Length: 196
Image 1 (cartoon, rainbow, N blue to C red):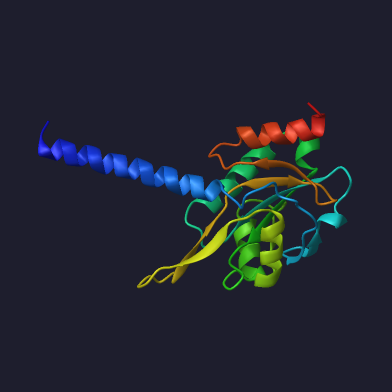
Image 2 (tube, rainbow, N blue to C red; image 1 turned 90 degrees about the horizontal axis):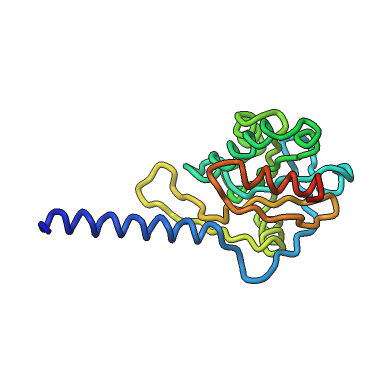
């Protein structure tokens, strides 16, 4: 084995371990089961609250931000694909909501433009850092600002990447882990609506 091959192999191993670590961190929230509960925030469609939904509706809550380079647009695209592939009677009972973990930069105007790329059904919601801290504690979310010196972006936000199917009472019906395809989300939604 040549030295060049050995270094290439080690570089590949380091990359795989780093990507695996990033994926694991993004999936994790705090220890214990999330309690859920009401989410009531200003949104791109007026004041949003779980309690204002119909009894037969479910929110698909996702916590992210508009400057996110990868996980957030991918997840919203997965939700959009799920809506397109679901039976119409299921898709129309879903309320997809992006709650920003970057309220300093994500204004409602920016959120409206961003979620608009994914469909009219999508809602962007924004609260204060205090409101976000409260929701994060109840939903076992991980999020933290990561400063990027010398970058025009100034900082990124590391955050959990799970989606939550939540009813109007704030009960988390299912936590759906991040996946690059909509199959897991579709299965979870069908299970909730069909009861099997």
